[in-house]
Amino acid sequence: MKFYPWVNDDEDDSFAWITKDSDFLMHCMESYLLHEGVSVKSWFPTDTVFQLDDSRGIKLTDSIPNTLHLLIVSEKLKGVLEEKSGAAIEFLPVRIRNQRGRFVQEPYFIVNPVGTLECVAREKSRFWCSEIRPDQVFHFHNLVLDESKIPPDARLFRLKEKSNLFIVREDLGKDILRAGCDGMIFQNIEDYGAEFRTD
Image (tube, rainbow, N blue to C red; front, side, top):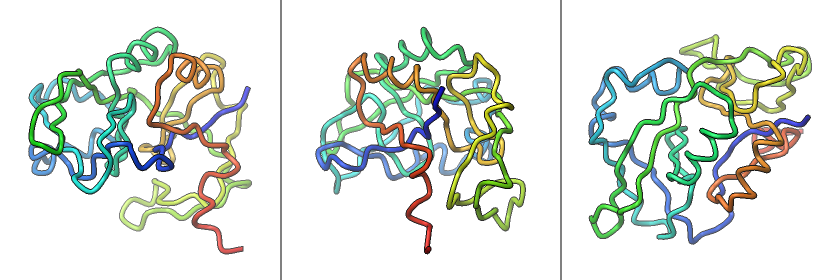
């Protein structure tokens, strides 16, 4: 079974993007925990608002592309993940404000898979670790997974080595695409990090 990094769909200029954190998360000392694979529902506010970027498109997608390393998904995509992913996920409700300053009617949620999975084949991968957090990969130049460390029921998970990177198993990716969800690309793992390669 193949595995794919879940990345933003940056190929369609009509898609709306979020490029700025919510006012609350921008000033919240705990906001980094959204990227750690730990439970945050005890403190996450139900009135969190994200503003769509004025310089991007206006089409709302099921997975809103963003520069915040978050999965922000529609109710439809939430339903697919609830039914098909088998993962322990917190779905944190958020509101979206469009470029005209109006709230969109459709509900959206941050997907917070609880837990991480250590499965990078370090000897086969090439990466650059964060200077601030040496236990975390800042950029992959090449990503290779050690599939012997991936449980047979893992269909969506965070990498322990880079906990803001989400990995999707092929069958779940197909379920999501069959449901007509858009806004994301399940990238061939061989291509992940290609923009950082110099050779």
